[in-house]
Length: 125
Image (cartoon, rainbow, N blue to C red; front, top):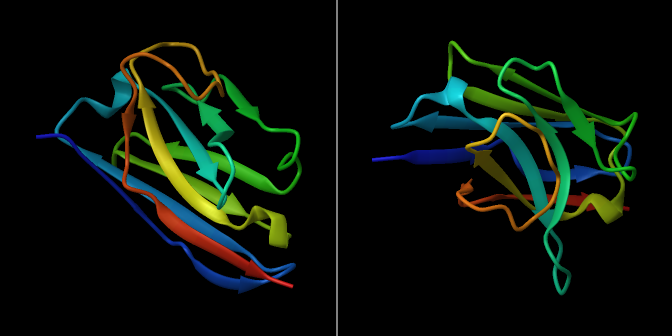
């Protein structure tokens, strides 16, 4: 049984930092490109960042470039998102996603994608 569990969300003041984690079990982690997506209230889900299986390909949404850093530890089957200089507009539910492809893409609708349940991030002004 595949399990995708996000953690690390919470309430933080603007300018603060959070580190999200996503732990995966039940499949071969190294076979998957990984990504973070988010959905704010009343808005569509959007891509935040993604990383290929070996970290050789990484992409970020323009809105988070220079502030967020994605990484993965294949030995621990865990994906991370270090979020610095947080802004109120970063408030959203953050979802971890696994893609059975070798390329990293931030499009929301990708076939075969496996989603986590999400973790809430709230940034107060």
